[in-house]
Image (cartoon, rainbow, N blue to C red; front, side):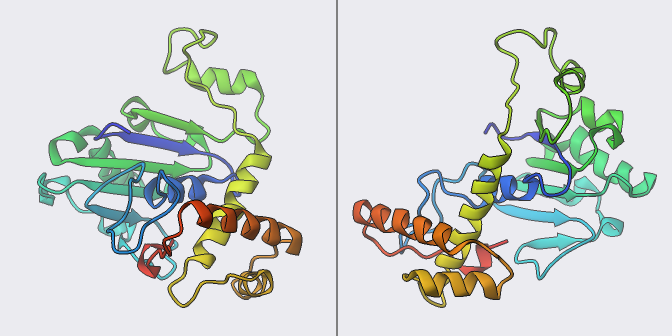
Length: 240
């Protein structure tokens, strides 16, 4: 992904928005991280990750509440920074104006930003017009509704080059499950290399995956280890 950028991500609750970002920011293109190496080849690389929202859950990244969003001028362009603004479309106009500076002047400070919301039409015009990427999770909207939105960004919504991606809800569910199992499997406390152990670990953290799904995932992981035999660890501090 070209740096710097400004991305608008919209979709109803449960559509997979957060897991998309987890895969982009923390995921490895090769789907593994070798021991002894710092990170991997991520889809989005940055020096600093800053989350801004109302619901921090023991954040393992930099976090700022919406009321304390600083001026963009305080950040040095020497470090690349990714700001994620989550579910703030109903915040006050003052907060929206503070966020707007990240969309309008980001490239001067080596900043990229992602704005996550459940309603596209709740996003103000300035952010829409200054977004370089648009991600729409279509959960029930008609093709006509989606075309109206995409039409703002292209001259011909029916052209072959129009960047419309239909996301299969089942594939989104499979990705959610894969990321959840991956985070538990690679915890540094110990690898859950048997089905019962991994299944029990899932239940302890609130996941109710079918036993057979956990077994299939673990079988695929075992085959992957044959081709990439080095033990793999994702530090706990990198988990969402």
